[in-house]
Image (cartoon, rainbow, N blue to C red; front, side):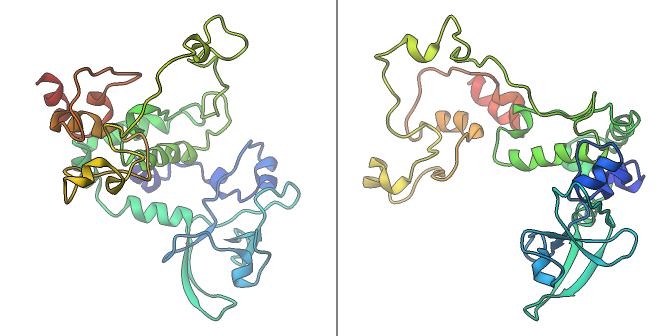
Amino acid sequence: MIKWIIENKRYDQKYLENANMAAAKELGEPSFTNATYLVGVDNGKLLRASEVGVGRENGYVIVGKETGDLLAVDPNDKENLLRGELLASRKLKLVTGETIEVKTGFQLLSESANSKSLEGWADICGISSSDIISLADEFTRHGKRAIAELYRGPVQHTNGYYNAQAIITLNLLIGNIGWKGGLSKGGGHWHEMGDKRDGPFNLKKLHLGKIKAVGVKLTREGSKFQDSTLALTEKKPKRPWYPFTSNVYQEILPAAEAGYPYPIKVLFLHKGTPVYSIPGSNTQLKIIKT
């Protein structure tokens, strides 16, 4: 969708060119993006103004929309408006003497989206390219009154963070942030534990003597193999361990089927189903059926 939107110029160019709050304010926008900010191609880091001698360390750099000059940007500046070029690529000499290649965030996004044909992306997704075109066309026909929303489905697996970033980017492209009918931050909720505003059933206090979970989780998340008792009898683990992460949702059923690090007798699904939430869910469904 991003590829089609950029190729057909169905993005909100004026919104994306705003480089700070002052520019956004002039156009009546409640937000802005860093689409015009320069990024180091090799290190993936936003270029700092101090690195090229145009400003302070906490400032960023754009290619000025009107002048084509390198300009330092303070994102929170509400007085001095700045707008930048969306598509820009340059080789710059840093104050250290090093020469690096930089591109705008939008340029990098465009190149990434164009790294495959529309048919190539469709093939990866297991759908037709006509479906992508139809959805992208419909999504960009309503100005700021359209939204790509997400929750557990796209994110509850290893690549979830990147899926979320891609979906949020769709919203940024049409400039719907903070607008009625667009994407807004959540307003909070009463909370499922019932511990807000003196709710009648505070689940945190209902079972004072409850037994706490101990040992290694079925998914091995948050634990190291070498610290487990299994390391005493196994030279290497039968399945990967994930000491530095959490919510390894896609590993629950395969681990249960393998009985590793232990078998289970009961599966309790809470707020979701792996069959709908994980790529390649046919494998998950097969495990449930057996």
